[in-house]
Length: 82
Image 1 (tube, one colour):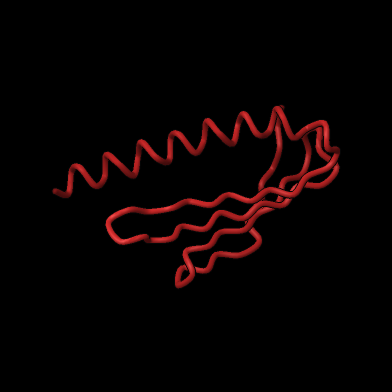
Image 2 (image 1 turned 30 degrees about the vertical axis):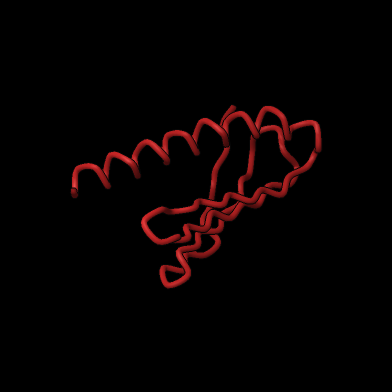
């Protein structure tokens, strides 16, 4: 599957990135990632709106893989700065 993901907005102060996707098998796709510091921890929230609904499962699996990579990357970065 090939899709283009143009960035809609970047808000560094709010640690928020919004983008859309065109191409692929969705007819509508918008997503937002927000990074929130929680003391010594960080929470990443990734919200996706998409159509058709039957794409939720395969895209959710890709999103889960991406979140796991983000978690590993953030943990390595913290470990190397300690």
